[in-house]
Length: 180
Image 1 (cartoon, helix red, strand yellow):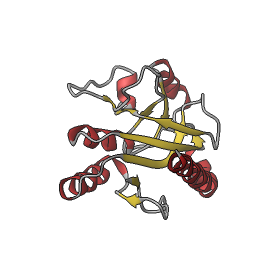
Image 2 (cartoon, one colour):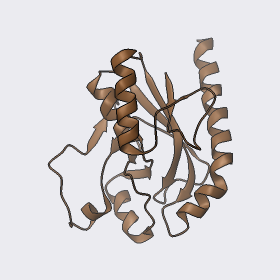
Image 3 (cartoon, helix red, strand yellow):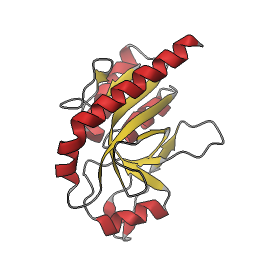
Image 4 (spheres, helix red, strand yellow):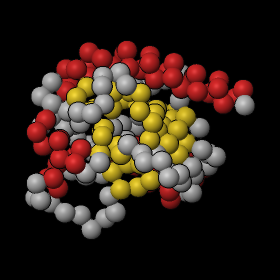
């Protein structure tokens, strides 16, 4: 099953689950309880902490939930804040999820030092729910912006093109897989 966030980030081949960590977790849990999918593929846009270029397509099976305060040792969590459905030896790009969009370019460089490359608001909750229901899952993302003071404006400017590129990528991958 292919899922996406919703609101202005929808695709005709994906089921919307909600924006942010809470909406996506609630709606995906409900879906899994009543009609458990065999596989979950989340499709969405993401911001880059600096190593990934605009409109680059990134695939991952690993997510974190690290808030900016953690980066300066201003907060801690007793919860497991990294989840992965990756069963290979291939190192994943870690996707950080928060209900906030990062705009502090200097602070975001600390994410890179932790091995975290991009951010998307929903992916951590998608993987946590997939883990809870023992469902293989992954994500495909297109970079719309860098995490800096212009993040929101760049996201708005690049969003439609990123959605088009994501759609082309996912449909091409589906076609490749159905030929095998």
